[in-house]
Image 1: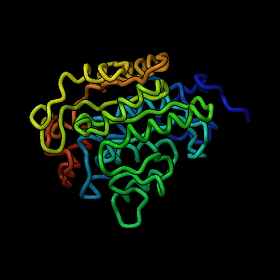
Image 2: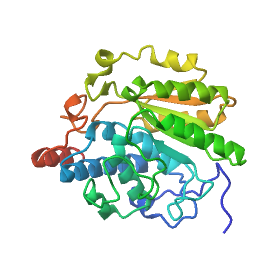
Image 3: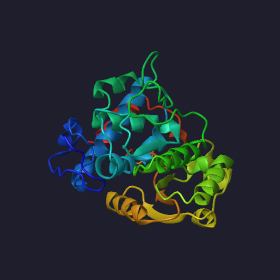
Length: 300
């Protein structure tokens, strides 16, 4: 069958379950409704809590804060194909904040890259779902992550490769705001502007916290938008939990020419679970059995 052109995805308007089950489509780029995506976002949060709780380790806070970002990308914005995760013309998603791997795994599973049942193997020996992403073993993962700060450089390389090859795919890189303490982020930001790479979009999960506490106390990034503008980036600020705003921002980014775009998504760490929200303790701490039960009840 011929592939649909970029920007002309098949129309699908069934339930959120249909979104997850529709993995046979040649190109998995869907015209999902906001209601369907909201249902999917809640489902992803439940996966995150369940898998981290079972593993007894992991990073729930930053996974929960980024849920709407990945929901918008994978179920509305990006062109990708679960049946062929190395499809040359796919849009690329780079998880630079690699400790949010549970969110990416849950999203890939709901898209059909791997069985949903496999999520229960998070962080187990010989599992394909390690604590940080590994592109050599996990279908749909574009970059092996570990040390922070490297994803934007990787994304720039992928975008430059697309330009050299005459391909029209887009590259989306998810960064943490605390990760932007890293100097390599700003080297990549400078290089991206130098090469006028407009197919590259950085998304910053701006939840205000990192492993040691609040960013303002560890390494104050303000004025954050001004820093990106000074490096020559188009800057868009949104509520990172508002799917309408996110989808609109990704659409605006596609219209930007001659420079890269950064979407600063203002989020709440631990979003959706009351005792995790804005609680630095849950940056890298798994919920216990009782906390899992409470969290899942809140996410019903």
